[in-house]
Image (cartoon, rainbow, N blue to C red; front, side, top):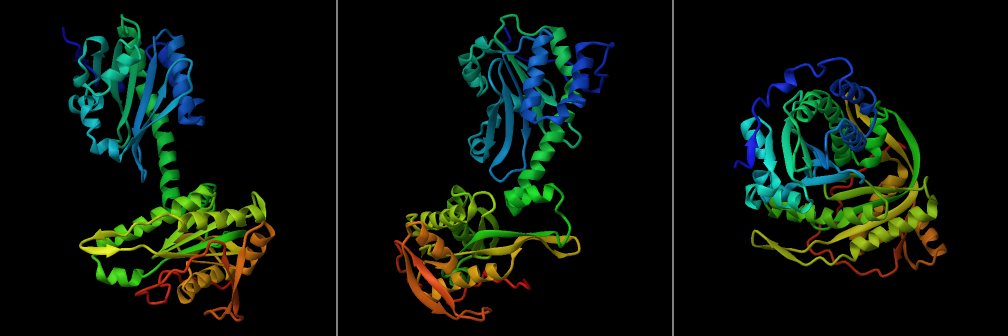
Length: 430
């Protein structure tokens, strides 16, 4: 008995008309997918389709649509629907790829043959496909995997499974096959939107991505934002970058980002950009007020600085990551600057420059954490200890800049550092 089969004629249905006669389930589902469904989120589309297919007699106990993604962390994802349960998002990341999960999946067989694959779950050995044991544990009896058509060769997959020992009838399979073009179109629209949003977020940050997607794409479209401004600067990076190969330097700076960025995001900050060896982030005041923004920035800085960083060796050289963080509470212009069709979404202004100069002072004063007077005042009013570190002249600021050292401050020797924050250069007319 063959328990794993490749369906004949699997490539014929996508090119046939999805409507065989007026009023058929295929016609009604296709109309719904191309009108009402495209206004929904993908999870709601799959959930709604699962309910509708069940209402037309398709005995679904598990129904999924999977897709490729352009995402820094994920290669792909999928929406899994089961009756009586909310949709579940399945993640497929780089670790899954490296573990060879795709090679063991029915999707690989579909891709190799170009035709749907049908699995008799109860009589199929676990080693045949990686998913068999999971399907059997759910009590599923029959499973079908097929590829959805797409306009650009992107891989979309549909699977359906049932607990019924009889499996799916030819008519039930036909209903699903004939709505594939409409389902693929709806899926493609939603995944393209998600890809656009995720790629933007990866490169400019989530808040700027939202602004851009809502139409803030013209140079000079800026708004005034008040925020706790966070600048972090890696120590000795200029020296390291001249001593290490380029790929090794990238590894070092990525390890440093892995310390600072999660702390910022954990406390609600927005990372706007990486500028060489510096991180620029803001904690906006608008949503929860100055006190919350300031305390969140202080806590993010402390979390990053308290991270235990063991020295490590790369290419025979021992690396010890050290960095300084500066905070300032102020206002800035937030939006698009640039020339022609090349724009940058950022914050600019005098207060951003003050934060950058404070970061430079960290090196000069041998400190790893300095804040401005505005931050210190809010911190003190909320029980935070702030030690006066004097006023210091800095480039670009007319008056000496008062600086303060937050609680639990430790000295941070800067052996081999050139004393200049190479990555932090803010030139602003504001």
